[in-house]
Image (cartoon, rainbow, N blue to C red; front, side):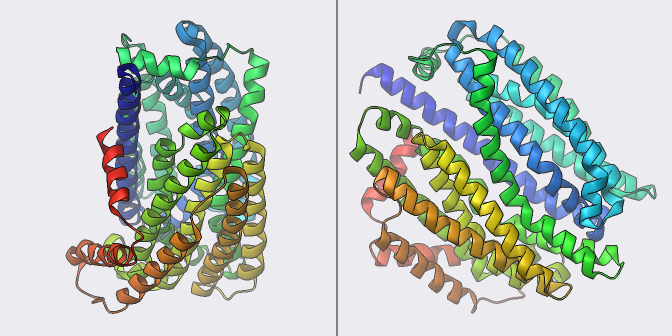
Length: 518
């Protein structure tokens, strides 16, 4: 490898670590946010807010992800002419976000009626403004990404995480303190945070940009062999990204949305009780989503080389990259899921009240398995997209959404009000996600020549089952201080079993050190 290539690899590695570090901070701030919110606006208010954000975040995630990726590609391809390209793309994204915000605000009464929750109409209308601000903010993130300014991108992610957490909790608490609606106050705080981050991002993007040699080399690598495209071409490339992200976001929110609908239907008019059960399920999601949230950034570091290897006809390299990355991801995912499955009540008690922990223990254990399957499903679809099979990836995600909707509607609609509806939702979600993972894994094997090796999958499942069994012998009421220590015990048990079965070897440790060294 030449020195220039080494500088590119080192810059990409450091940039990836910066973005990953920001993602970890974002997740940690989310933990603080979700644990403090029930105390700030009440459990029922927290549940009502969860209904609002579940619906709003479907489009929010589409705007953020598609804008960031689309602008990043366009800026990288434009090279020295990127300022003009950025101005053109930001106009496109602002217009799209404005249209989506207007549509979402107009649909708010209908969405609230479906949820059986008329009290969330005003917060839904208010959060439509977040879409508009995201339509301006996300392209700026894309600009920084396309210019390989990963540290600035990570800095903005951290600043916004702090502002959003402060707005949701602080403004919501002020509204409750003055006799108002905590849900409306938190929604307003979210809007204010989104509005304030835009000028900060714009100022940071206008700061003098003098790329280092490695940054210039990274940008040239991204732009190599690609010409500037027209607005029509840009939109045609943006559409698949947006569709894929829409299906992905909907998959992550459809279960709690349907649960809210069926809880309201069976609540007998007691919307406060329905909101409280939604809050319990949202608490379960907080922990069940952790493997996906943490490993998503890892996939962005592991799989950028797939497209190049595919283009060069290096089929053996593609197979090797996919198998190595997917296997390590399965190990990391299995370790996190084993902790959640082994000690769901302890984890919920660590972040929430004993009442929430008692209600959510069973549903969380089931949902953790389903979301673990979703984490690997997301990796599988990322691999397919990296190999040029974006449409297949989108089709699998759409099929997953349909399967989850059908399973949750069938099981949850017939369950009794309360915890049985939560368990039914978790079961329906997990069955659909596991089936989708099996299908996606088969397609990845066909396209890439491999995925998670069968023996590795069996060893991970075995270690997860044993670690989960060990969790049943852990002390259940030892206070919050011992929960992290007990989690380490479960994780260590999982890793020890993989070492004993020789699933983890010195080669894996060397690969981890190499990635960390970059």
